[in-house]
Length: 334
Image 1 (tube, rainbow, N blue to C red):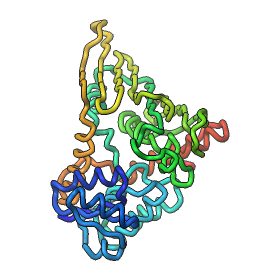
Image 2: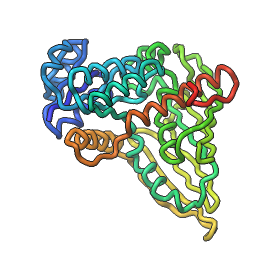
Image 3: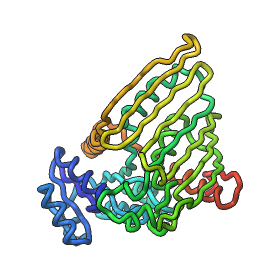
Image 4: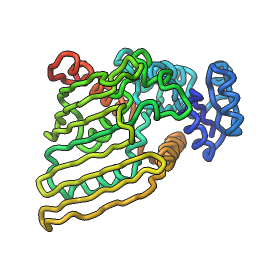
C-alpha cells in the first residue's frame, strides 16, 4: 500500500508518521528543504514536484495543506486516478466548487473522506455510547478554548493558517470538530445563530471568539463557545435530557485530564463513566489513519464522508453569515 501525504506541516508530518505502519509513505511539499528534513526524520520518501509524486502512483492520498488548498489537491488526486482521499478538516474554506468536486469524484469512482479525529476521542465515544441513558436529549452546551500562540510551539502564531482569513483560519472553521461531533450526536443542523469577534490584541485578521447556537432537525438545541484566548486548553460539553445529564470535561494538553459523568433522574446521583489523567491524543490520530488504511483496502471503516464534512462546513459558514447579519441562517441555503 502506498500513501501520499500532501503537506509537510505539523499535521501532515503526524499523518505521515502514523501511516508508516500500513505500507510505503511519501510526503509532497513545494518547500524542498522542509520536506527533505521531515521525510528524513521519518525515514520515508519525499517529493517537491507534483509530477514526481503522482508518478509514484499512490493508492491513497491525505491532503494536509492549508485549508484554502484542500479541494484543489483533493481534485488533483482524483484526476490522477487515486480512489481513496482523506482531507484534513475543514473540507474547504468556502462552498465554491465543493459540490462539483464531490460530484466529479463520485463519477470517477473515488471516495473522499474528512478528518474527524475527535470522533475517536475516548470521551466522545463514551458520551455517544451512553446517550440513551439520559432519555430524549433536549439541549447541549459545548465549549473549546486554547491560546493561539501556544497551539504550535516553536512557530510564530501570526504565520499559522488559523490566523489568516485568506487561508481559511478563524476559530469557527478551525474548531469545526465541535460542530462535527454535535451533528454526529444530534443530526443535521437546520438553523444557526451566532456572534463572533476579535476580542484580543493578537495580530490576526480572524475571529478569536465565537458563540454559535444551532437547532438540529431532531429538535435538539446546541450551543458552542469557541475561543483562541484561554491560556489553558479546555474543551467539553454538557447534554441535558429528559432522564438525566451527561457532562464531559477535558483540561490541558500533554497531559490532558478528562472526565465524563452521568446524572440519572432515577437514582438521583452522579456516576463516573470515565476518568483519565493522561489522554493519549496520538492514539485517536492513529485510529483515524488506521481507518483510512482500511478504506483503501476496501474494508469496513468508520471515516466521516466528504458529504458530512461539507455539511459541517455549511454550518460553519452559516455561523459566519449569522454573526455578520445578526439573523438566523439556514445552512442549506448557503
